[in-house]
Length: 204
Image (cartoon, rainbow, N blue to C red; front, top):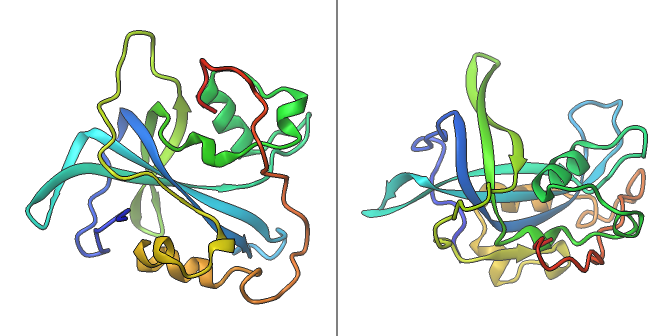
């Protein structure tokens, strides 16, 4: 159940610009400490997107390039919404209802198409790719069929077959989470439970 096969030495960034894309994987990495000590630990997930219009050849196989986005499972407040809420609401094309804010299953985005706006920024002398925004596909635009197998991983699954197939850097991140190290989280993450949207036109 592969996700990413590139190593740092062969990694190629997704070109900057707008790309038709599809989310194919949601990996929970548990409660992670921030590099900034003033921020409390947050429960996080990584979303992986494939970009059919940009390809890379790995081991003789041509496949879509991929890009990932790290998100806190936290919606923020009514007056100060979090990055996670802003991105997903933009992707959905409508805001969350109060009922949805009480519990949203972020794994529901797996398989959903979108438009990604990718930009490059320079940090510590290195150019890095970044997802600036996620929006729905315009009416009439179609995303090609999904190439990668859909993957959903929750930390409660432990070191199962799905975990073993994750890239080593993702496994290492999961192994550092507070849940696996029996350290109580500094705060409780926002509930990520069930999607009650009931709107069949929106896949999540």
